[in-house]
Structure formats: C-alpha cells, structure tokens
Image (tube, rainbow, N blue to C red; front, top):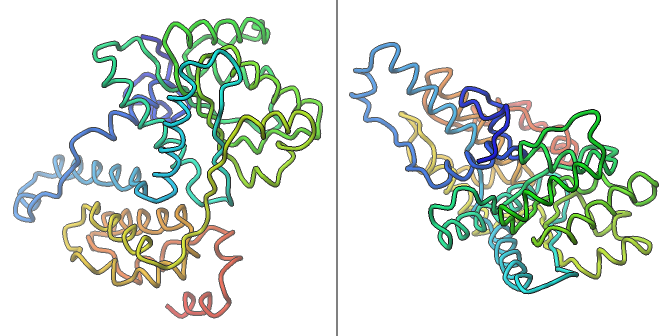
Length: 345
C-alpha cells in the first residue's frame, strides 16, 4: 500500500482528500457505524476524562457533518457512474464530467460523493484487493504550472516530489502507479484556477489532457462557473467542451427539498437538550439567512452545534444560529431588511 507522511493517525493533515490516507479515511468514515448520543444519565455518570473524550468525538462529528442527499449530488453520481461504465471499453477520447456553478453551492460535495460511490462499487467488485486505488483526488493550485499539476497527482499517491524531479519523471511515475492500481476515476477540484488566456494555464490544461490520455480513467472536474470561463474557449476549450458533459449546481429555492435537507441535518445532531423539530421549524429562516446556499447552511448548522457543545447549552436555537457569522459573500447578497433583523436578534 502506498503511504505518505500524512499517514499518521494523529495528523489532521492526513484527513485531506488530496492525500491517499485522507481519502481512505473519508471513505471509511462514510461507511462506519454512526455515532449515537448517550442517554443523559449515562453522560452524567462519565468521569471527567471520558466526558472530555466523548464531547471531543461529538465536536469532530459535527465538524465533519455534510449535506449530501441533494438532487444535484444524485444527478452528479448518476452521470459520473454512467460515464465510468461507458469509458471502460474506450481506448482514447474518454468522456468526462464537469460540475460547475457559483461558489458555495456544493460542487466539492458532489465531486466527493461521486468518488465515494465509485470507490465503494470498486470494493464490492474487487473485495480484499487493498492495493487498488480506484479514485484519485487533486485540487488545482492557483496559477498552476504543468509540473505543479503533476506534483499534485504524485502527492496524492505518496510519491516523492523532489526539486530534481522534472515533469516527465513525475508523469511517468504517476501513470505507472495509476495503471497498476487500476485507478478508474480522477477528481480534479478548483479547475477554475486554470486559465487558457495564459501560456502557463494552457500548458497546465494540456497536462491534464495528457494524463487523461495516459491513465485509463474517467476524469471529473469541479469549478466556479466553468461554462462562462476561459477554460472552454479557443481550440483547447473546444476540445474540452466536446469531451465533457456538465452538471450545474445552484442555490436551492425554498421548497420540499430544502426542508428535507434541514431535517436531515437535524437528524444527525448529537446534542443532549435539542428537541427534534426545532431546526425544521426554522427552515424558512435558514433559507433566508443563507440564500439557499448549501455550503452556508452546512456552516451555520455545524457551527451552532459546536457552540452548543462548548457552551453546555446542548441545543440549537435561533439565537445560536444568529451567533454564527455568515461568510462575506452571503452577507453581501442578503437583503438589507434581513441584515437588520440579524443585528436586532
């Protein structure tokens, strides 16, 4: 099994999706038995050290809590798995997927869930083959160069990236490992960091295309408003547009799906004094406050849950939600009337 320095269980950096140990921990946590809330009498009976450990586990649970059961996620997984199957027999010109939309609308969540679905399916088809690496996940660095792209692939796999390593060395090592490990899906996040208006950006795009031709895998990208970006312009952009289909993310309207998302998050809370239904009764308030942005909703609820544990209140209230600061973009986009209500709250 390929490992990296991030393989230490005490190293939080190992939890990043952009390392193989971090990705595998993400998959393992998704299939692990969910943590449950202790009955109040059992909680009260814990000694100081055990109570600290239990509370710390709950904080970790809420920190990782994600909204995943959305129509966009389901559509992304369906489209992605269809492409993976269609690409199995392709020798070249494999089709890919682009998840595109405004910031904070769940693109990374959708990409990660596609990877999770493929990883679990691969494990079912090939049980006990731990040497397989079904999914590779990278994030495109700002102003990425071809070597930086190759280095991100190598770092995920735990391959050494030395100053003396040129792009050919890195590329050949990555292709060799991915081919041997039967990598079937490559996830590339923050693809908007590549601009075809610059020579460096064009070369970085060519590097990704070269990887897609050398690695027999389906490539899925995610980025902000890709269809309106330079990535799909010019000759290179036309090639990408001809090979990739897209799934669009967007702010959610206040409807039955939004209500179900809030209810799902409430069902996953591990708070001793929180009464079921309190959060769902605030679903319209949450929609107004977050503008229907999934990322902002997740931050609001998770932040309020963390505060509830740290403060000892053990419940989420409207005041607790108001105490969690919104991201700057959400504050800019909200009507002034609702901003005033927050200040008065």
